[in-house]
Length: 129
Image (cartoon, rainbow, N blue to C red; front, side):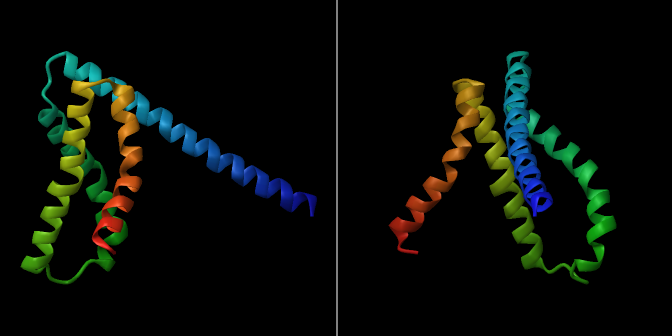
């Protein structure tokens, strides 16, 4: 019984530590991006290079582990959806995030994405969904 309680407590501490660690990495990323923009890099340049670097790192991993789950043929609808998700989701978020760092501070820009669930709730409530 005591061993189960210790294991549960250790798991809770590990989860909380991981969540705190992610916030520190996120804040550090904001400070580094702010420094890069102060050196003269444009936000769109940073977004393009970071997206391409992520593609180079994650694509081989996705092909290796997920290839069996992919559809046999890519339809025009699926390709259109993937492109819209890529541009409308990640690219737009990163561009707005970097613009927020440029206009305010890394601390303010890091805090703003945490408001997204509340804004989504307000939008859903307004639309009656």
